[in-house]
Image 1: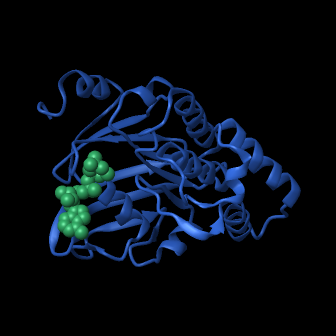
Image 2 (image 1 turned 180 degrees about the vertical axis):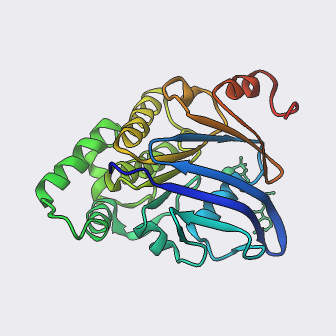
Length: 248
Ligand SMILES: Nc1ncnc2c1ncn2[C@@H]1O[C@H](COP(=O)(O)OP(=O)(O)OP(=O)(O)O)[C@@H](O)[C@H]1O
Ligand SMILES: [Mg+2]
């Protein structure tokens, strides 16, 4: 991935069941950038992730709300079409998929995404095993159904394993750090840094400064009541830690 590409979010108004949650979000994320979004519970952070991925229950107000990858408007695309364009979300609350093992899912998804490239399946499998090891996720998880009976932390590691393996152009992490022990937190941060170096543009939603001890955000945004009320650099994280969101 050498070329810089942009994910542009413009004037995004999003409602669910006739209740407007997002009130005009503007944000541009480029390859290799790390955008952190922080904000109080219920401010609309997860809503933004679902709207980006195309969840059918999340409706845009009108055609002035736009999501684009470079110049391609993706508003009306289904989630799998957005995934093929390179968007991927690590969920705040990942769902279990009984009957589909994590390993087979990863191999199938990889082959679908990179079907125009020559894939060495043995090295792909080894790479998945190594990434799982780096994340301190036992290899046995590759043979288990996705998230089925996984602990909270194991689900977050499994999400991270998917992102690192599938190398999306834009990665959205919704509280990937919540529920992780300190060793897992470091390896997840390493994984995010690795993606960033490989060219992925990143949107990282978090409540805590601790993951940012290992990562250097290029941009930090504060979301309140469905709006990005302040954008800046890492200094904003310190303000949030010290004083909460009252001053924003
Ligand atoms: N189906 C729904 N019907 C009504 N309100 C909803 C629905 N889904 C979400 N909301 C509301 O939208 C608001 C934003 O929720 P969202 O999950 O985006 O918040 P968040 O910023 O991710 O919060 P947290 O930090 O707790 O994860 C909340 O007030 C939530 O209750
Ligand atoms: Mg949320």
